[in-house]
Length: 350
Image (cartoon, rainbow, N blue to C red; front, side, top):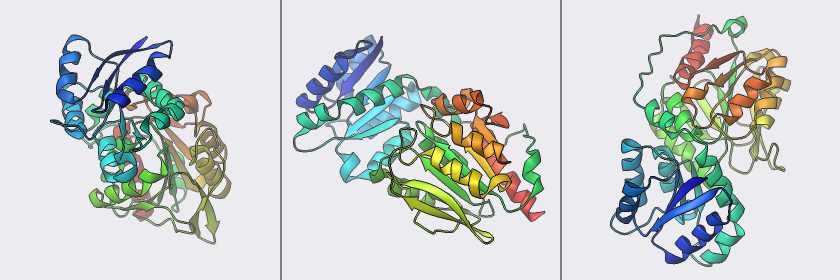
């Protein structure tokens, strides 16, 4: 049994969300509050395992509360907000601050929408309950100067490398950590981050503003170029193809694969097929098993593959499954990943 606190200024939302969660046999709603100030009084008596949080509230807004929470006592948070639809930049900020999921809340017909989307809410709360939020919180305080070096071996056999990365829950912060530390000479990167389509463009734009490399949402036939990271659009699969000496991407509408669209498995399998030993695969924090089988196909094709370790993951599901399948050449911390990618740069310029 795990405990949930609901913070929302709408009495209807508080009631409906509580009813949905309390029907689950292993969830107990320990309290509801119409703003973070009232919530703190509840939390002083009984700390929740998961918080369902609105953004627009009186007295203290959700982002301010989220920032303080993650600094003082990191706790899994699911944001439920109308800003997920109208202000995706705000939703991206919530993810950056440490929220594990952001769910859209309608302005009209909210009760029926919440009932219709009850399964999504439950899935997000269950996922958050399994997260190691303190790991994400500690990432920002650790130095990017990693003393431990990883033997990349096969990476030094060729120079035209591409890097394929897959992530889910906790991945927004993890990707920011990695991409911020890369230089403009870094190898081309293609990324699948599980994220709704309303978020991916804003997520890419924000990363582009803070990173030395170019980061953008992928479009069909974009070239994979050094110093560039392409992020799969929400709701579309991202694949790699080769045209002569160049690598290009395809953006494809299609059914969910491994329960996701975009799917990490789809990206990794395309890398196995068209890049083989010229590809490097990295599977990062996330719930479930998407990407594990695709990473195994990459390794079998000669690619060098890495899985993020449990200690630095917010959710260890995807890397754990990849490790179980024997898909990873090495298990590495998040703090090592930028150095691994930069090592490819140095190999190329040697």
